[in-house]
Image 1 (cartoon, rainbow, N blue to C red):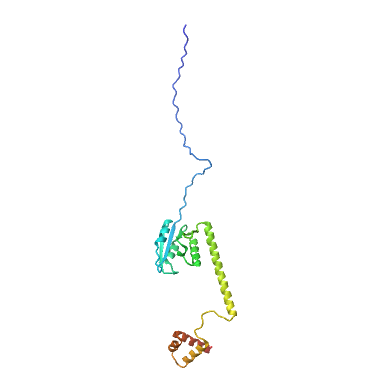
Image 2 (image 1 turned 180 degrees about the horizontal axis):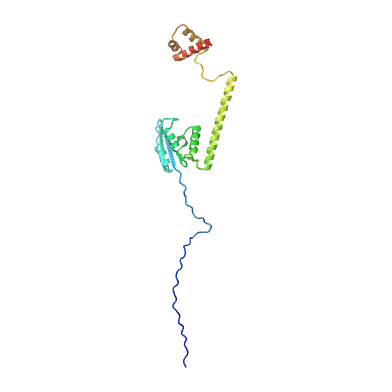
Length: 231
């Protein structure tokens, strides 16, 4: 008698449909997402100035300004310490908020502390910054702005002290019967002699040659004497 066999029939497995999974961002823990940087970089504007009288060259200044990224460079050539600087005036008038005026050295902008502070006030009023490469001054940095404010305060203090000393000197001179101004050209005896010569009919030009002065000086002396007589 043979053994009974059990036959198991299995149905073929149906393939499962793939599920779509959204891609997952691989983000590190506690790391914020980067925000788009919409801030624009400041526009660096250079100013280079040399003296024609001393035969200076602009190339070293221009090269230094270009090296730090100045997009526009204003060049000026002047004679000595002239106060009328049309190129600098045009530059200051065109400054916009966010611009930075760059110079190679402070004395290229001004050789007077008072004038320098006035220029810095104009730059600040335009919403712009200032940089000096040699002295490493940058007013776009808060610490540097404080330093420039302190410099302005010291300059104002110096002006007030000079004013007080001048007033004290004038007061002391008046107490000693000394008066300021230019020394008179003639002594009292010379004035009497000149007026006598004019009264005798001698020309003012001849009297001026004798005393080695301009004829206008003799005429003013004569006119002042007549006004004193009338008064």
